[in-house]
Image 1: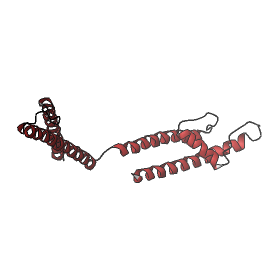
Image 2 (image 1 turned 120 degrees about the horizontal axis):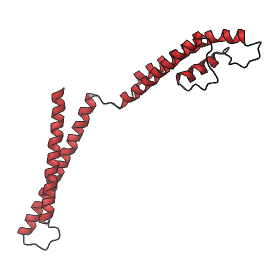
Image 3 (image 1 turned 90 degrees about the horizontal axis):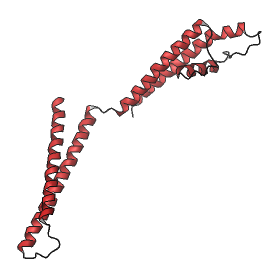
Image 4 (image 1 turned 180 degrees about the horizontal axis):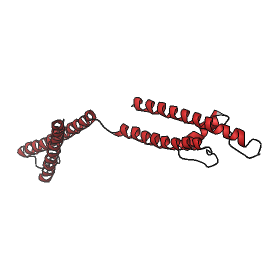
Length: 185
């Protein structure tokens, strides 16, 4: 698994969440401490770091319940920064997950080679089936044993021959695709 991008992502996200939560706590706490303590108005307490951490995470994920919001201009600025950083981190996470599904050149060549090998095995198998059925038919017919139920009919031989030709064409196409990938490198 690709642990490098994931660990980098986790480190960037943790640092950004911590820094933004700290900044919001610093700039929002004095406003609530000095303005609303005596007025009896319900407010969100930024005295605790966990409160600002919760606000930052909710803002970065763009959930924003609405019961908590920044009131100072600098606090609003950091909330906007949190939204932008959250969108960036979300797109970065999508890019990391997408990169897990992308194949590099070595994997593509390996898959093409395995496909070529599979088609070559199918080609050999169908050729052997056709040749065994044909030789058995001629051997049994030449021995004068025409009533044998194991004699392949002409239609069965024709079907095996067509199957063999199809396998050869698939093998040639897979071989051509593998060679074109080598030429592109």
